[in-house]
Structure formats: C-alpha cells, structure tokens
Image 1 (cartoon, rainbow, N blue to C red):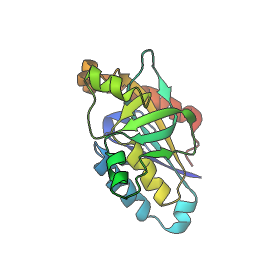
Image 2 (cartoon, rainbow, N blue to C red; image 1 turned 180 degrees about the vertical axis):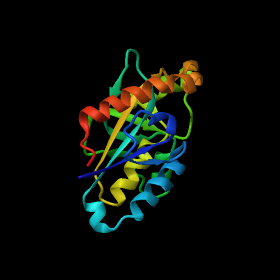
Image 3 (cartoon, rainbow, N blue to C red; image 1 turned 90 degrees about the horizontal axis):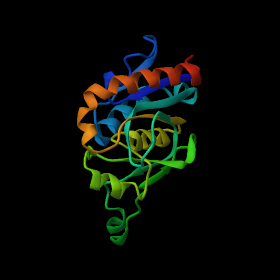
Length: 187
C-alpha cells in the first residue's frame, strides 16, 4: 500500500523522511478539502485503490492532561449549524467515523483557531481534541473511498498558549515523525 501524507503546514512535516509523498494543504477546512481532493483526483482509480492517506498535524487539547500523539476515530465539523440546516430539510454529516483510530476519541475540526478557554470548554462537551483540517481530509478521502488515518499531536491546551503555536509545532513535528516511522509502512 502506498501512503500519502496530508498536513496543513510544512512545519508539521519537517522531520518526516524526505522521500514521502506529502501534500501541504494550508490552514483551515476549505484549503484542506481542496488540496486533498485535488491530490486524490489526480490519481487513477487503480492508484487510489492501493493508497492510504495519513493526516498528520498538531492540535489543541480540549480536556486537561492530554499530551502526546493521538489517533481519533471520529471527526466532528464543529462550526457548522447542523441542527438549523436539518430544520431546513437538508441532511448534514457533521460527524464522520474515520474507520481507523480510537472510536471513543473525537477530533473537532473548524475554521476557528481555538485560543480562548471558554470556547475550548464548550467544545470539550463534544470532543477531546481540536484542529482545523481533520474533518475535511476525512470527508475528501471518504468521497474517493480511500482509507484514511488521522494522527494528531497535542501542541497546546486550546487556550492562550495556542498563540505560541509557531514555537510549539516543532515538538509536534518531531513526535509525529517518530509515530509515523514506528506505525506506517511507507511503500
């Protein structure tokens, strides 16, 4: 199986082996959805049949004591008004099962950079971790029937400490590279 690494920023992938196929999406759901979809659409159906995507990145912890690398089994689009849209008669899939990872561990994805403790605490009622791309990557992969794994390293506590992300992300990059080397065959 061939592995495609999808990450938001080069700073999150700097310690990965140089020969990996890496797509850098940019920050946020829209950028991640476009870049992931483009990368998958550029491959033939036969190439996609032998492909797995690994979404690597940093994230914020929504609950106390969460440190290290996690593989959530559920992603949640946290900043869509799903109930209101359903009330208008439209279906919304704001929660996706990844198909891999811990099914009890939920990653909330949104375009909001969470650096406020009150916002963090509200999100903690629905999820354990927060990022800005995971849901979009999973949605794109599921649209192409490509297996995906979401692997996140806690860089901060989704509070004012998140504003130092540019400094904190180096630790995330090192730990994500170590996880990748130990857990993924990169043929």
